Length: 256
Image 1 (cartoon, rainbow, N blue to C red):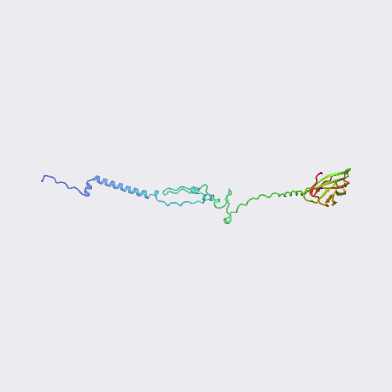
Image 2 (tube, helix red, strand yellow; image 1 turned 180 degrees about the horizontal axis):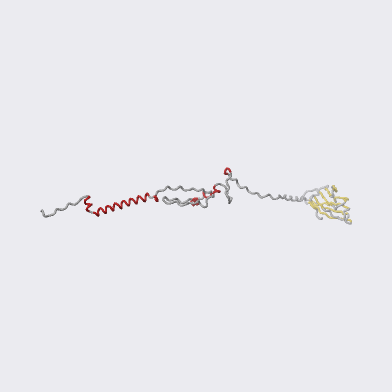
């Protein structure tokens, strides 16, 4: 059949690609997209803004004694951690941290800093002592109480002459349950002269006048519950018939 056309053979390989221009364009565009993606990924991972940086060391601050024992204050004084890839912020020392003079061991004076003494030892403050006031002498001790005695006496004037002489009596009484001796002391008016003295109805004792004081000591004890009168005669009394003092065994007489 010479009148019929023979079919053209189909192109293979490069010839097929050359005969289809849209395939070549699409393949090139795909390759360019892939290369662009690879380039962008490489740029983001190695760019200067995202380079990995070493972590800055965490600053340390000296802590006072009260802060070291309080965990809440320690956590408040620590700075925030630095995030890799970000610019670290400026950190200031904690406002309530110890001052330079406290940290160095030198007390603050409110003005210029005082350098620490040699050896680093701070002398303790000297306590001020108040000046000693004038010392007062202690009060004298109270006088001793009068001696107690079971003997008592009562004075009376028995007779007088123009207030220049008188006969007086001291009646003695024993309140004890046993017999007791006794002693009477009498201070007559100044200038008086003792004429005589006696114990009525009992054995006599001894009397004396010395330094203006008349003293009579019993010659016999007075029985329990008994009484005895001591009498005496004074003259030149200077117009007074009363003694200034009378005692029995140191106890004042009544009736004066």
